[in-house]
Length: 202
Image (cartoon, rainbow, N blue to C red; front, side, top):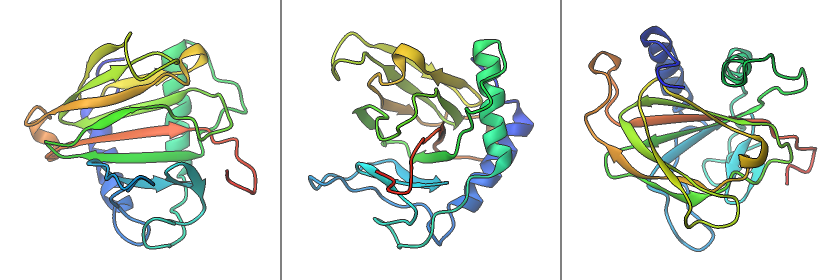
């Protein structure tokens, strides 16, 4: 849904992201078990994602307790689902996890699935700042078929149902394409998820 967030809401969300990025449990570089380093940096709310699970503390960062998921952000997620599907979401669909990824000009994200959650509820993705090429693929492999979509600041992208476990990634950010009035160099992507996770958080 193009331009789903208007300029004022984009500024409000950007301000919140900057606050969440501050330590403790702030913006961090993610390293994979194989020794790789993600070029997009990340901060988590509600639960802390790390490759490949969830924890209540920033286990691969400073070890601090993860910041809470704000009620207003969960409400925004429900509003997004209502807009995307044209109906009020089921009452039990309440986003309790947010991953905020910050992309600089040369950052990218390889093809992956959001598969650590136990809930099959749709994922809500919000974009701020520079545009990007968003590659949305299939559920069987990281390869073709896939579709490349340009996501711009304010765009909403929702995937659920049979596409909930589709592979997706960001092969390219388009520097300098964000709204001048926003005051953001780079791209922020906020993904809202329903964890469905118990005390073990696995």
